[in-house]
Structures are given as C-alpha cells and as structure tokens.
Image 1 (cartoon, rainbow, N blue to C red):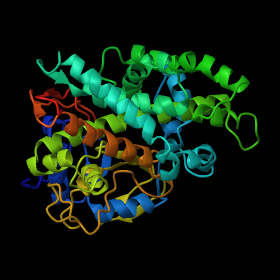
Image 2: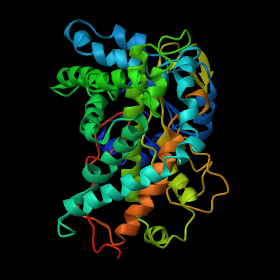
Image 3: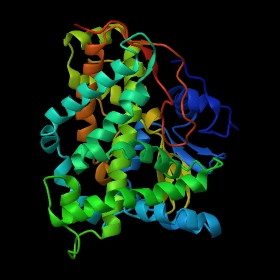
Image 4: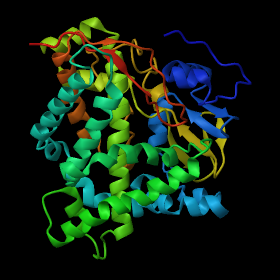
Length: 417
C-alpha cells in the first residue's frame, strides 16, 4: 500500500470519503505526515504511530472519563431523548478510570479469561454450524448471492454473547437490532434525521428486554453472566441495578458489534490471499497465528477516544487539558517501524505487538472471547465454502471511530462434501 504524506493544511477528516472507504490507507498517510498530529476538523489530536500509541495507552494523563463532558453538551429535547442511553453508558467501565473502573470491571474479570472462554468452545461451534446452515439456505442453496453481514458475521457474535448472558434462544431476536441502534449513540451519528428517536428507543429497550430475565435470575440464579452480575447487587462493593444494565449494554454491544466488524474485514483479507485461504481450508496453518495477524490488519476501531487530563508535551506537541485524543489503532497496527511488510498477512512474524485490544487497565475485557469466536468461525466458513468469492463491491459505514462494512455480498460456490 503506497503512502503519500498529507499537505500541511490537511484537516485530517475521519469522515472524508477516503477515510471511510480505505481507513488503513488514510491512516498510513496521517502517520507518515506525523505520528501525532492535530485534526482541525475534529479539534482532536490523532496518534497513529505504534511507539507513540503504545506509550499513550500507558499514560494516565490521557483519560477515558468523558460522561460529564458529554452531558454538559446536551440540553432540552436532546438531553431528554438520550437520558436512558446515558444511564447505560454511565455503567460502561470504558468511560471511567480507577477506582470506579476497577469496581465495574472486577465482577467480570474471571468470566472472560482464556480458560473460562474455552468452556464455551462446543456452544460456539454449534452456533457457527447453525449460522452456516442459515447462510446456505439464504443463498437458495448456493444459487444466489448472499450477504454474510446479515446472515453470519452480524448475528453470530450476538448469539454468542446472548448465550454467555443466559438469554434463552427464543428471546434473542431483538439483540442484533438493538446493538445496531445503540451504535447510533455510541458512534455519535448525530447527522441522522432520526438520531433522537433511535437514541431514545435504544436506551429504553435494553431495560425492557432484560427486565423480566433479571427478575427471573434474581429468584432462580443459573450458571450465566447475568446471574453473576445480579449476585453483586446490594453489596457495598457491588453493582447497582443501573450499573448492571450498563455492564450488560457494553458487553452486549461491544461483544457483538466489534467482533462482527472484525470478522467481516477478516473475511475480506482472506478473500484477497489465495494461499492463506487454501491453508485455512486444508487445516495446514497455525490458526492462532493467523487470527492474530488478522486482528492486527483488521482492527474494528479506527480510533479509541481519550481526553487530556493534564497539560503535557508529547512528540513535540503541547497537549492541553480537556483536548480530545483519537487513538488511531489501525494506523499503529500497520506502522512499518514495528511491522515488516505491514499491509500483508505474514505468519512468520517473531512478535505481533498489535494494539487492537488496547493496553493496560482498559485492555479489552472480551479479547479472549473475540479470539475464540474468530478461531472457530473463520476456518469453518472457508472449509464449508472453499470457493467463496466476493460478489459486489464493499461499502463501509461512515463513522469516526469504527470500521464496519454495511454488507459483504458473496457467491458461495460448491460447498465441501
């Protein structure tokens, strides 16, 4: 991927058509201009170099606390429309620093270790097989193109996280649609004509959908994550009811949305590399190493957001308290100072220090689950449909912070016998 530097007066617009259509190329250009640069368009610093971002993730002078600032920008009708959604976001550990972050995260830690996730292998495999059957049926048994976002990469992670929470199979139909709507709030799609309507609906829907289930698991706890969270309710160091709903919202949303976005992009990368794809089909590759490379290349977040908590100098730039910072992971993950041949899948890397899951106390809680799903779902897709091929050009959603394809329309070809 060729790199050309930005003009000195380039506004660095994450919603520019190039940034939407090809985020890696866009962020390569930003990084080659300056790994720490000011965006006049977003009034934010953009950190896109790997050493710089690695250091920034460790620096407590860059904070995730921003709910108070978000509230302060709302008034009147919009504040009322977003009230329920903001209550959910208040329970997101992502938007807090210790000690609140620690209190919100601690009840979940043991449930998301690699060992704990390994117990879900059989359940995830069954879900993968079921959705691949759905893909085949949706394609009229291979005779018509089919959208993998609609029938595979979007519903699968939703079903997995619902399984983890203990949402019964017959009560899950709302989840993927709710996640899509809540993303309007999370990703700040304020230009939508229906922004306030969707924000209100998504904020109110979660409590309505989970309320009965929460009552049931209060009375009769089961071996699931929702029962575990409810067991802390009322304890001095436990979670409030609103915080439990907030924890559910971040796990249901982030555990679904980011994994769905990543798997869609990963499939595209595999479709571009015949040798790697065939290795997947024959089982001759190290699936773990390949998943890590795909995570490096296809981070679902263009940028994680931080706020400058105190004045300081960074990379020759003076950062002021209150300024926004975009942690541009896609750019850092393709930094040639750290990764040889950074725009290609390479399974011979001695180290792969990608930053897709962040770092430190904000390291992604669901990393082990995302790895498990990807390690099972991606090989299964290509082993079931070894002749899979792209049928239509991919269009990406216009978003500042996430990289997500609207559709991934493919021809399945002849399935494996």
